Length: 187
Image (tube, rainbow, N blue to C red; front, side):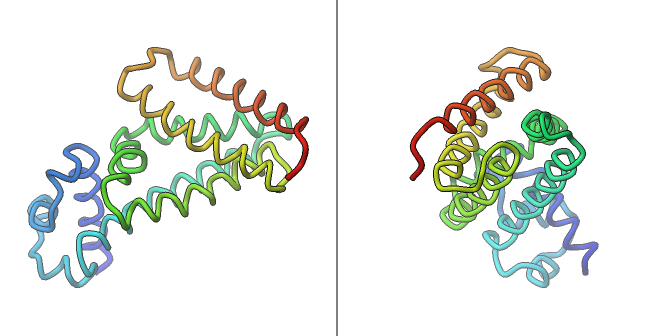
């Protein structure tokens, strides 16, 4: 059953990550996975359940990649490691960016998960450069939201810089913002 579940998740990534919600249905996923719909319902209650499982899988993969990079980096390089790991994760498979940053907005249940997860990711950003207080979490939340938009604009060709330029500039901005936030009165 786990092999069929993996096939369904792969099919969902392909469809949601390329065609969006308009091309993603239980029927289309089953056809893409070459599985009978009966197998779909052995693993998932409905399409929302599958898409949330896909989103969670992508977030877990991203979190693991970011955590490994931040832990391997020296104290001074943690923010760059976080930015690099995120950019590389999204750039390695653009479908991930579409699922995480675009299609998550098109479904009420998935959007709720996106908001919940954003705070978890903000905690990782805060750990890379902040102190865990409310102001640091506010700063990290702004950075996460802004970084999501930046990644989308870059993936869509609206910002035409190399991967390294994106990493350098985003790291510099993240660092400047967290440094400046450190001078503000605490909440």
